[in-house]
Structure formats: C-alpha cells, structure tokens
Image (cartoon, rainbow, N blue to C red):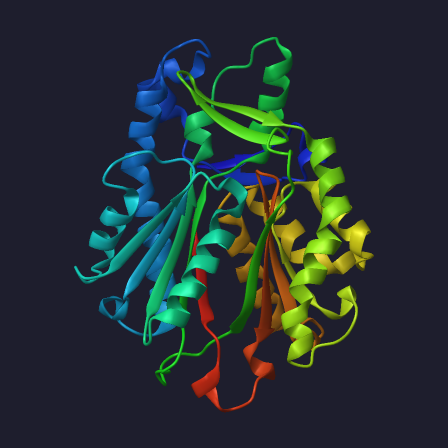
Amino acid sequence: MHVHVHVPGEMTGVKKRYVQVDEDLLREHPEFLDPGAASLPSRLAVVAAAMPGLVAAAAAKAIAEWGRPATDITHLVFSTSTSVQVPAVDLRVASLLGLPPTVRRTTLCSHACTGSSGALRVAKDVAETSRGARVLVACADMLSVLGVHAPHDDDDDAVGIVAHALFGDGAGAVLVGADPWDPRERPIFQMLAASQATVPGTDHVVALELASAGVAYRIEAGELAALVGANVERCLSDAMAPLAAVGCVGAWNDLFWVLHPGGPIIMDSFAAALGLQPGKLAASRRVLSEYGNMMGPTLIFVLDEVIRRRRQNHQDRSCGWGFMVGLGPGFTIEVMALRACGDIDNDKSTLPPTPRLKSSL
C-alpha cells in the first residue's frame, strides 16, 4: 500500500511510505484501531504471513544481480525487530528461495535501526572465517502492523503519532563473500573493518515495547540528536584507523557516507558534528523522504541509493572510501569502513569480503 504522509511531514522529512496496513486489513481486524484491545497475537500473525514473501522478493533480486544460483549460498543471516515466531522467518525464506538444506542460518532480533548494519558485520566475520562462503544478508521490518491504532488524547500518543508518520515497512538483501572469486561476480565495495560502540546509560532514549495492544514507542528525539553530535566523531575516528593503514587520508568530506536516516534532526546533528557539506547525506535524505524509516532495512536502501548515484554521477565516484553508519537503540553506533572496488588493484585473491546488493519493497 502506498501512503502519502501529510502530518507532520516537516518534522519527519517523510513524503511517502510503503506499509502493509490498508483498508481491507483494518476491516478484517477492527481491533487494531482500538488502543485498549488485546490485539498483539493477531498483529504478529499478519506479520508472520506477509514477511517471508517480502523478504524473498528482495533476496531474489539480490541473487539475480549477483549472477550465481541460489544453491551456491552457504549462509543466511536474517535480521528483524518486528517478527516473533518459531521457527523464525529465515526458514520460510530459505524455502521460498530454494536455498540448499545445508544453508547455515543465523537470526538477529531486536536491533531495530542497526539491524542491517549488525547483520552485515556478522556476515563479514562469517565470510572471512569460512573459505568460499557466500552469505545472504536479509533484513525486514513491518512496524506499521504492530503500531497502527486510532489516535487518543495523551502525551504518549503524541510520540506514537510522530512515529506512525516516520516509520514504513520494507525489506532489503545483500550478498557478501570473500575469495576465491567467481568470474560472474562483480563486487561493489570492500568491507574493510567493522565496529560497534554503545554509549552507557542511554538505553532509555529510544525503545519499542511490545504490549497487548501492539507496539509502544519511547523516543527522546532531542536527546538522541545530542548523543549523536557528542559521540559520533569519536567513534568514527576509532574506525578510521584501518583506512589510514591502507593509505586513505583526508577529511570527513573526502569520504562517501551511507548513514541510517533516523530523522532530519539526527542527520542534521551528524552532519554538524563532522562539518559535512550539504550533499554528503543526500542519499540518506532521499531514502527517508521516499520510504520513511523502515528500521533495519533502511541502511540497505541507503547503500543501494549510494550505488545508484555513483553509477550515474562521476562526482559521486570521486570518493573511493567511505563509512556505513548505523544508529540505533542502546544508544548504539555501528560503523563499517568501505572501499569502492573501482579503486582496488586487480589482484582479487587477497580482498576482504565484498557485498553485492539489491533492495526491494
């Protein structure tokens, strides 16, 4: 379902989103609109039925662009914060895609906006330690189903209204592998190094809590923006060391940026802390505008947008080094150093893992 967001667009930076909720779903489940109804089991059942197909569609596009058959995939790393079932969604996705029965599956839960960055970090580790591994990373969230309800008059609902205008549904997928290389593969980025840092005592700033009536939001946007501004340069400086070791030098504006767009105030604080030029976060701002914050999958959408811009615009390709940054509850900052494969030498036998990407709704 395609939804235009009218209120409060100037606050969220979102022009449109894609969500699972439509009139037919609400007619079938009128309890979803009642903030006092015990509707969580029904909501989770809707997510369980819809999410595998959404993930499989995104993954099928990634596999097609990768160029090798699905049976060559050795590992599946799946991340979600909006599905609670056993067996997990990854088992159904593996079946829909025709992955081999020997595929090694790992599921990450409840990482919210750092879902895909965490999954990519895990995939990098797997690829580096399992020779010949090809890891399918898939991430999906469907917060609209868990959070929709009719508005009511209290302070907590004011946060919920903003959240409903900000969040959308989506799924994304990436292929990650290391040597030996297959000639059918055309890697895009090297994954040079990955790190995670948590600011102590900040777990209250962003939280999603499952209650009987669905999800309840706790978002301190102003405090979160201040935390980003105060901590991001330190975390990025620590992550810069691997780039310096292989000859990358320069200022923050010399890099390309794949940033999770939590919201306009978050991106503004991030850009101000680093002194970034206005266009450096253009990919993140476009994804937020066109899709909303999809939590986990959003960063994959931004990565896809960065790739699209690099293919179409020579100026975007002038930066061969960059950072992928996930910002999420905790408060957690995930950083991955990337190097564009157009800037590497021809000896691929020693390259670190490289992602192959396509995203889909």
